[in-house]
Length: 455
Image 1 (cartoon, rainbow, N blue to C red):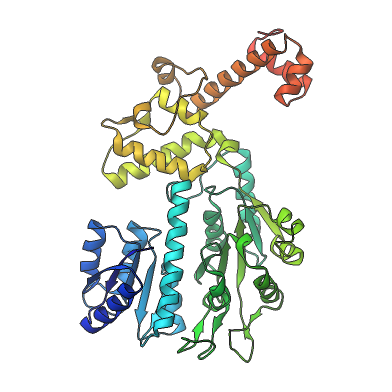
Image 2: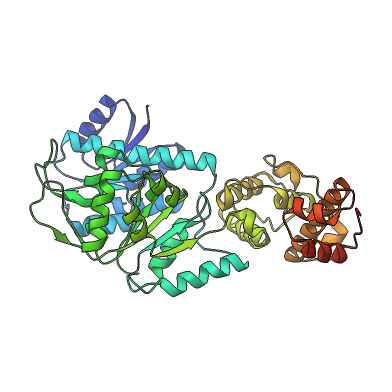
């Protein structure tokens, strides 16, 4: 599939060679002489990948990388440098570079690196479509479930213990991994992320463990893998359930022995890495199905942290909405400060299959659409208003947002209990069974809501 690639280099010969290779691979290519021109192009046109030199006049590759990280997160950038030391690679990867190439580069290495970067971009785009929006920079929540997450993070952050983060897509697993790193003594060392679902299977071993010169066709020089680049810091293995089974054995050995073997290497390399893994699939079921090694599962899940879905923490929705309103009002130069009663009711009743990412995307779109300081239901075209009773504007003005959520959800719950009691002809035992709660709990709620035998 054709992708648009921006090549940035101050040497005309390098721009010409790279452009020719990439066009032969079937891609559309634009060029820029330095980072400043590249930023102007990126601000005007969409691209799938940036390939940039490191050393350039005016705006260099690292400055361009920082701009991309701030303004277009998710856009992969590959650095090309004649100064291909491990230290340079670590610094680039710490600031969000997808990968790096050293001059002179082999055509096969170039093609593998580009293919890997575009696979990551495609995976990111697919996730953005399924669960729109990008991750927030802070973990926000005050419900009991989130307080438990915060407690667990604080408890394990300072230790070298391996952590397994589970939860649906869009719940913030990467944020928790970063929090574990930033709260640890490794905070000044690299945080290296590997998306196991975005790397072609044939490249997995070289990606994780690196390779030596001559290890395979196109290996014109030695290259450290992600384990080496994360030395002293944290290695975040996202979507660990996608790791090929033959590599699971090698990962298990690396975790147990704290050493790795480069592809084509003759001696093991000691590594000091804290591993954090994440998955949105049931690894226990994967073990039962034979898709995931039992011993690796237990090695990874020494300290599990489960992130609840947004449906399970709907009481956090007010502070999340307020956070995103502030974030996007500032970013988009607007002054949107509240949501209307019908819009908030629709947000509360939405099932949130994409979790926090979906909410973030919807709020950003709403801030863009609204012409006033208030988001209305018309600004949320992706949502359909449910059947739950809502408060009117006068009632809303008398409550703060958090109290409104409590009152609104209570009204929804009362209406549901009333309907079930009517369906069951006032039989409390059968109604409790249908609602999935005990008879005593139902009687307590009936008393609280003033309901009797069918309402």
